Length: 431
Ligand code: GLY
Ligand code: MN
Ligand code: MN
Image (cartoon, rainbow, N blue to C red):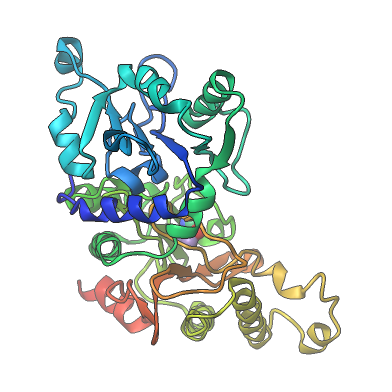
């Protein structure tokens, strides 16, 4: 493993908290993600299912976890299934987890081979009244075109056990995962630390006429060298007007002298993510206009992030952040104060220059689970990411930090990533 071993108490505690939320006499079945193939036998890489990882710490494909707190036999209360290795797998792919290793990582005492899953489940299925099954409940990304391991488990289970009651694993994990434990915060801090050195490396290597993908390469070099599992998402390295396309990530343009670069990137360490955005001038010195825009966005970040504290509703925070940005857009001469005063509230004018939300939970997923209707609580980690995008001026600026909600307000986990204009210019010009 690339990352330091995680204390299995994290997963034991998570399972206990999960079990407390389950309905009486039900079995939860959690599956791993698929290894996705490209065309032939090559693969796109593997990212573990976040709920399975949260409850087991197992980072291997073809894994199933059963949690059955009310099982009559104690040995059936938690069972982990991993795939049995063989000579062929050893020769082609290398080592897979032994039962002992899987037990040590997860804290689950009973580990079985995956090929025994159906047989073992059958022995306890009719003792239970219902099943909890996993499903991707992301509001925009659920797609029937992509059948997942979870989808196949739902089909299989409902066909085999049609008269059981069915419940959603995601409803429980969505309630638990937003509140991070100390171990989880420490893992996110590790991801942020790698982000900080990666960003500094990018700054030191940026110069006029460099290609965006060369900056991406500096990022990737530092990330992998530092033990990150992978990018948290494909990084956005957007110079000039490219920064106005919110999800631009082709990263294949030449960075022009006088332009600004927007770098939105994240580090995935031990399956925990960071997500930060910084902007910097290609030639190492902000122009007067770039400074004005940058200072406006930085002001919104500093003021807006103060609103991230216990008891605040995310939707209320978004409204207040929109007001902050609106004021800056008037100051920058992009909106007219009188027109703003008489605008249609359903079609606010700021949306022309600021068109996205500015906070999301972050953790095992970059856009982590959590309901917008739930007030913030101590232990939650959210991004704050205001931006101003002006295509007619060929400039887009977003600044993004990650904040841990505390009873005192919040703590900026991304403090070490340079953000002040002077700090960025100093690194770019003096190393
Ligand atoms: N990079 C995705 C986001 O900032 O939410
Ligand atoms: Mn974000
Ligand atoms: Mn981001």
